[in-house]
Image (tube, rainbow, N blue to C red; front, top):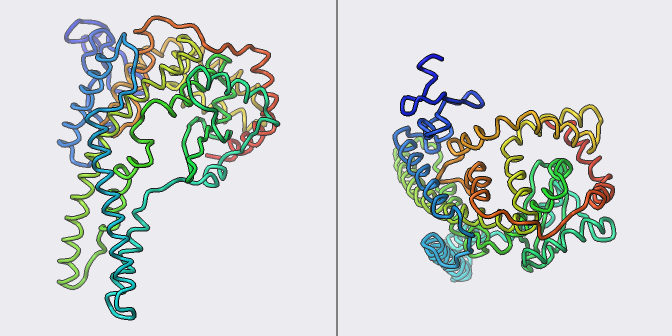
Length: 413
């Protein structure tokens, strides 16, 4: 073997995945190599420093949590900073709205009314977003207990094991994904399952997925609070509003320069807050994984995370089958073959995920570390057992939605 293919530190043969720069699978020499995956701000030296720091913090967080149960910490530095800034931002928006209303009504039909109207419009633009169910149902189909009793039964069982109320709305979409969120003034809990993802998982992986997603309602994720959303969105909107148009006259160019500097300052603060809150969100993801383990068992939760590692390959074969007018059974068969073929590559893919997914701005820890963290803990049995026949009945309930998803997959790029 050429010396270039050996690790300079321990002489182990190096590995590579997806045309990435090689690294040592044993001592991990070269695994933290900076590349395009670490470019966010556009300045190479800054991006390099941020990437190195993010890589170290990610590894340190994993080491601190390895072998110990995750816990939803109500108080952390990230949470204190995010909540504090959110309170200040919301107070500022309310003050802007109040001042705008006062100026709008003061000495009516005078120029000062225009300033008031501008302040009111700005406050409306910067207001916290409650989310709307209609925006979610535009890309997914709602199912109810009458139409999918077996699905609702297993969701109910998993909710009880995880310790959360049943979601108020259950959706099934055409994306290779799953998520939970809360919307509206009543903060309705929404669970959305991606049909291409759900269809190819085995029964216990489905339970682990439900446990993970429902766990987001109780895992203390700082991103999901109605109050704390302000810190991660409002400043970004301010930076956008301050983005200057190209000036022509000298005065316009001076205003452009001031707006540009203000926009970059606000965006810098925004990025710092996002990076701070995302570190806490990664801890919350680990906790959601633990709740997935509680529901589906350790083995299923590990398989589920390894499935996410090879999602691109799975997505390719599902789309191929959809274009051939094949339904969910064929998706599952093609996915099983792809997963079996990729098993030998999973260890390297886990390591590579630590390189390409390490970031201050990532809300999820590297996928490979999520599976590895589960494996550092004692194996747990499933809290909810989903039999093959019950799982098949769920597929029967979703037959019409699978067909709708197939049509969308067949025409999407």
